[in-house]
Amino acid sequence: MAGEGATMNIWALLPEVAAVIVVALLAAGAHRLLQKRLAYKGGAAHNEVAGFLFSVIGVIYAVLLGFVVVVVWEKYDAAVANTETEVAAVSDLYRAVDAFPPPLRDSIRRMTHEYLDVVRDQEWPAMSAGHRPTAAVAVVERIAYAVNRYDARTNAEQDAHQAAMLQVQRLLDARRVRLHDNEASVPPILWFALIAGGLATVCFAFLFGVENKGAQLVMTGALAAVIAILFVVIYEFDFPYGGAVGIAPGDWTVLHDRLNLIR
Figure (spheres, rainbow, N blue to C red):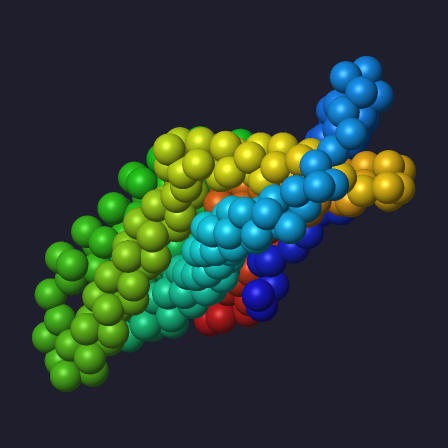
């Protein structure tokens, strides 16, 4: 996952780390309750049968869990690439209008600066909070209108006009994809299946009988922790512009500094 905008906030992961620890302790505590208070001896005599059934359940759940992780991971990578595409479209548009008449060129470049600032300073915080941003809609529509209504006359102006229209199209498409990527891609029914499957997998581990009760509790807690960690990965990657691994507006800041050097 490359890109100047891809970052990770370690401190933002603390709640998730705490949640993983709590899940592991709860799983181990529930198992200990069966061992001690209910005088549960475990299914040592049926470990062979239980092991076979556990393998089937584990494989099915692992396939489902792994598939979801891959899907949201690819979504995150695509969001990083799309952010770079949107930034590049703004940069290329700024250069493409160089052959426009000075009044129109300067007007489009001012609107381009405005779009950059609004996206970086208003829309990015809104996306990080899980909202659908609309602050830059009016600006990008004004840019598109200004480029589309330009009446090119010379061959050089026509070439510049076509290049500018292409960049406007790239910008609009990248913006639309960005807004879509900010929405959840894992539906509630799939979250239900993941949670139910995780509970079934952990609870099934309670049926095994092991002489070393402490080691069995550690294994149960570790199993629950691994599942919980993958839940955290799914949740974080499903919202690529928020959370601990949220895409930061670093590329926009770099572009802001570079545009000031273009004459």
